[in-house]
Image (cartoon, rainbow, N blue to C red; front, side, top):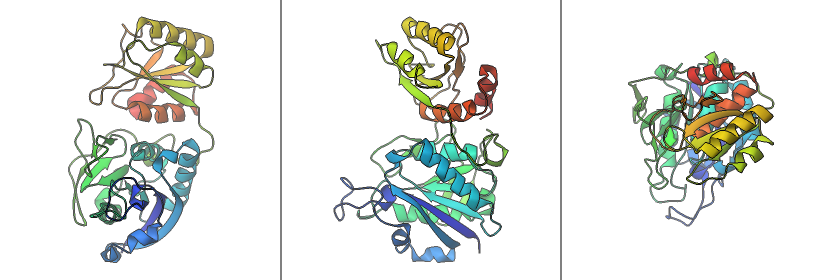
Length: 326
């Protein structure tokens, strides 16, 4: 039987509210042991080890907690007796944590994140079944080498491409235009695709981490004041611009981008506020080529990659290659 370690961080799956209700609850209130009590048949799927890493709402996640979580998982995953890891997590930022771990875990063993849209005290809470399937997925031989995955509502998602698309329904996630990696039927996994972007043990960012570069996000809207870019450049090494359309913005913003790049050496990445599609380089909006195209990464995921990239190099051409590779 496979040995799976559950690293619990809290979230709605560990939330408590009014008995039977699905709203107005406090996330990260009960332990992972209490959740496992509700799925006794999980003992037939894998041998479990529990690590209660933290117990918080996922909006409390930040660079420091990501580094600590990644370092903890890297310490666990190298053990010969460990076959895979499941991370329980809140859904609000699960896509960011999944991508961060996808870039920093130095192993091909399965890493699966899961959570819930309904608290543990709700009628028909979805957390226990998601956790059951996540454990089964982490114990599955076909999950080896797939990168960090997220298991939700019988669906296997890539940690790179998953995005939350609904803040109400239990089927709350999607994977842009790429489809999912596969599906679960009870404890059985069925894979139909895989990600071709570099991840986990092949990533240049895998291994123990210390301090990462400080990167901000600036959201463009019609009439947005460009002074925000100057302010952010004075306090950050990089800025993700979440622009309209193909990561677009006004001429005023273009002039400020050029100024900040030349004055402060700020590295800019162009992402899009449009949920589907791809951002390419654009000589109209970026004639000096001071901005890096985010490709299919959302603004929040582009921030993670730029923060890691800037911890290795300040060369804009090298960082452009990083965005093409990851």
